[in-house]
Amino acid sequence: MQQLWRSLFSGFDVILVGAVLGLSAFGLATLYSHVGDNVFFNRQIIWLLVATVAFFVAMIPDYRFLRTNNAAFYSYVVVIILLILTFYLADEVLGARMRFDLGIFSLQVSDPAKLILIAVLAKYFAKRHELIGDFRHIIISGVYTFLLFGLVFLQPDFGTAAIIFIIWFGMILVAGIKFRHLVVVFLIGLMAFGGLWQFAFKDYQKERIATFLDPLSDIQGAGYNAYQSTVAVGSGEIFGKGIGYGTQSKFLFLPEYETDFIFAAFAEEWGLLGVLILFTLFGILILRLLYHAVNGASNFEKLFATGVAIYLLAHFFIHIGINIGLMPVTGTTIPFLSYGGSHLVTEFVGIGMVLAMRRYTQRKPIERDELIGLS
Image 1 (cartoon, rainbow, N blue to C red):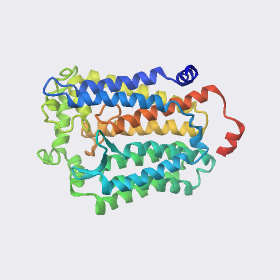
Image 2 (image 1 turned 90 degrees about the horizontal axis):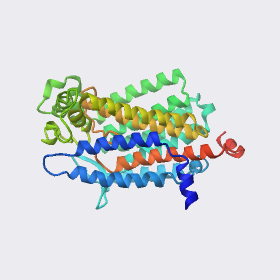
Image 3 (image 1 turned 180 degrees about the horizontal axis):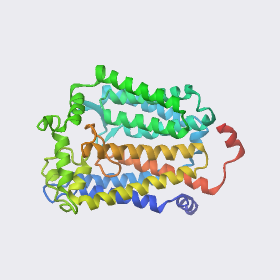
C-alpha cells in the first residue's frame, strides 16, 4: 500500500491541482446564496467529493496500455452505442434527450465521450505522426469524430457537438496538418454549416444565432438569456456585489445561472478583479497541461495531454463568449465551475490521467519495443 501511494504521488502536480481546486472553490462560492435554499451548492459539494475520488482512481493505472491495445477503440464503440440509446431511453428535458436517469444521479454520455475521443485520436495520430501529411488520415480521424458529432447534434446538443469538433480540429493542427489540407477542412466546415442551417438546425437554434447577430432584436424572447447575462457581467463592475448577493442570478432574472451562465453569475458577485483571478487560475491550469504534453513519454502522451487542454479551453472560451454576448447561446458549461456531475467527474478524470502519464514518464524511458509499436 505504501508503495502504491508513493507511486501515485510521484506524478502529482501541486500547481495544477491547486488551480483546479481554486476554480472549483469559485464555482461553489457562486452557487452559494443568501436567498432561499442552497440546493445546487449542497449537491455540488457531493459531486466534488465524488470527482476527487475519481481523480485519484484515475491516477492509479499505467496508461501505456491505451497505445498498445484496442481499449480506447472499444470504449469508443460503447459510447457510440450509449449515444444511440439516448434517443430511446434517455429522459427528454427541454426538448433534448441527453441524460440517462439512473436514480440518484443522471449520466450525460457526451461528457466522457470527449475524453474517449481524445484517447482515440491521440493513439491514431501517434501511430501515424510521420504520415499525417496524407489527407486520408484526416478523413479517417474525421469519421471517428463526426460519428460522435452527429449523434450529439441530433440529441440536440449543438454546444457539445461544437466542442467535439474543436477537439478534433485542434488535435489535427497539433499533429501537423498541411496548410492546403487545413483550407480544405475549413471549406468543408463552411459547407457543413450551410447544410446544417438549411436542413438540421431547429427554429430555436436559428433564432439564437440570429439574436447573436442582433442581440437587442428580441430581448423578451430568444435574446432574453443573452441580454440578462451581459447585464449580470456588467453589473459586477470592479469588485462585484459579494458572494451570494448576485441579484441577477439569485433572484432568477438570469436563467440557468448554475450551469450555462455561471460565469455571468460569478462576474456579478466577484467583479473584474475576480474575473482576472479566474483567468489566471485557468491560464495556470492550461500551461501546466501543455508542460506535461511537451514532456510526455511518447507522442501518445503528448497528444493526450494536449487534447485535454484543447477540451478545457474550448469549454472555457465558448462559455465565456456566450455569457458576454460574443457567441450564440448553446448551453455550454465552464470547467470546474458549473453545477453538475458528469462533466465535473470527466474533467477530474482527464486531469488524473494526464498526471498518471507523467508518473511513468518520470520513472523510466520508453523501451525499444514500445517505440517499435508506435512506428
